[in-house]
Each structure stands twice: as structure tokens, then as C-alpha cells.
Image: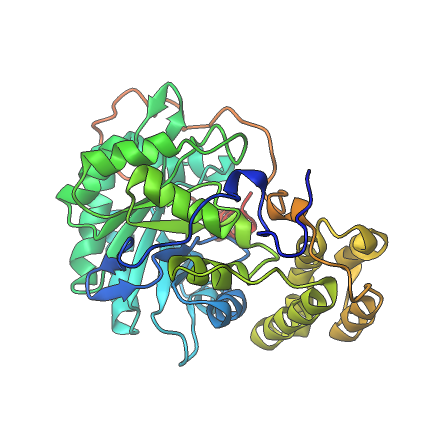
Length: 405
């Protein structure tokens, strides 16, 4: 890959000529009473978008920062970790929570409690492709049955009242069974404030290129705001997506892993400015430690540091001189050990251009989506799928969702 030179825009070649936002070119994202500027949303990601990471991203730039998905059944059953993940701090505003559930009654009751707790925005996950979820008829399997999906969205919207309630979906199960247009119709008819589309199918997982044409197709099909998700690696990608699809905002997922400063870059390009160059490895180390301390304060040091293990590799991905210590991040046991490890990093190595688009998290490849036996026999069925009900089954279900796989 060609490297950027001093004075040259720090971007991949495809974005070198993309102009920054012009005055009045883009509008704030309107979700009920919320007006979000820039029109940028942090994607809810399991095991990632807890309060420590949201707070870090928020300090770099403005936007809407959504929690990782919180399961309705775990929340209603009073699971300690589920409630911790749904919690916030007084300085978090607007407060945004993504819920997960496949039973309208559970979703409605959870949303009611969240509204009572002062949440400003609620999203619901209809896009999780994880096999342990879809095989029970949850996640990306729900839009296959529009009437069931409608019941769930209706329950959420009614309980949310004036609080904007949005949905997030994928393109479909696979290219032979796409559902995004049905999902858009349901969202609009049932009163959702917006729909977010990850422009890949569940079968594609995170492989290949996102189909931005599907985003444009959905924009044409509905009157509510459409948020585009998929392949926003650089701030310029967000501008290109909005210009090419006319979507109302962008959802940023894997591109910000180990790069929370991406939100500062996004804020600048939407305001018509060139972003600053990314931080060198010394500054990245400082941000990494800040993140670790927030995790330790929120979860306790033992749990927080274990969560931080994956982040060390993500923050240093692509830095040539960090390779010798990168695998050691996966074995850290304490903040002190992490601080010692960061001190070994070369301080002045510049951020590598190749690290802009490198995959930091989700596994590649594709899958055959697992659905419950006979699930496609009656797509008009609106009966909620049977969820795990014994305590040990529910605990395993929660772990599967929290791990993202």
C-alpha cells in the first residue's frame, strides 16, 4: 500500500480526492427530539461498546454512542452483569441503549423500565448473525417473519412513548433471502424513528464489501431516516456513503476499534475541515492506558484488564515495531503489567496508513445461517420463538451474545 507523505492527506488512495462537507450539505440526524450532529452513530458491539469505551469515544467527538446489546430476558431477570452493561454515568447524554429480545412482552417491559430510568434513545437488534442466536429464531432471523417483527417493534414503540425507538437490521439471511425492504416497511408502519442497515447478509458475516446499493434502495423505499452501516473505515468513507446513498446518517463499527479518535476525524470532515493526522504510537499508548483505567474502574481491575487483552492488539495493529509485544497483551493480568508493556512501545513510530482498513475484530469468511427446524415453513407466523428458559441455558445464551459469537 502507498504510504502518505507529510503534507498529503492521510487516507487510502480512494479517498484522496473526496471533499470535506460543504456548508449546509448535510443535516443533523433527527430522531424524535434528538438532533445529532454530526450524523454519526457508534455501532452497538457486544463486548465493546460498554460505558468505558463510549465515554472515551465521546471525548473525541460528538455523535450518538449506543451501548452493546442488552438482553431483555437477562435485564428483566435482574442479572447483575446485564444491569451493569445497561448502566451509565451522569455525564452521558444522550444515553442510548440497544436491546435484544424476540418476545414482544419482554421487549415492551424492558423498554418501559429503560424510559423510566431516563434513557434518551433505544435501538433494537434484528441483525445479530451469531449461530447460537439465529438457531433459536433470534437476531437476524426475526425479519424473516415480518408479522412477528411488527409485534416486537409495536411493543417497543408503545412503551418508548416520546423516546425515539429505532431498529437495526442486516440485508437478509443470504442473497437468496433478503429482508431489508420488508424491515423498512415494518419500521415505518409501526412508528420506529429510524432504521439502521448493515449492508451485508447474515451469511456474509463481516466478509467482502458492504452493499451500499442496498442502503440507497432502502432510502428510496421508506420515509423514515435510514442509517447506513458497513465499511466506514475513514471519515471520508462516511461522506461518500451519505453522498452515494442519501442516507440520513452513518453507523461506525469495526473502523473505530482501537481508533476512538476516528470520531474527532468524523466531526471535522462533516464541519468542512481536514482532520488531523492520527496519533503516533506514543500517544496511542496513552489512549490505550486511559481506556484500560476506565475499564478497571467500571468492572473492577481483574475483569477490566481481562477485557483489555483484546484491545491491546487492536490499538497497535499495523505498527511494525509493536509486533514484538503485541501477543503479550493477550496475557496481561494487571494495570501495572499493562503500563510496563506500554513503556516498551517505540514512542515516535507514526500511525501506519495500512492500519486504516485492517480487520481488528470480527472473523472473516462466510457461513450457512442456522435457523430453527421448519422456521421458513410459515413466514406469516407471529409466534415468538422459544428462548432458552432454564437458568443454565439462559446463562449460556447471555454469554453467547456478550462474546459476539
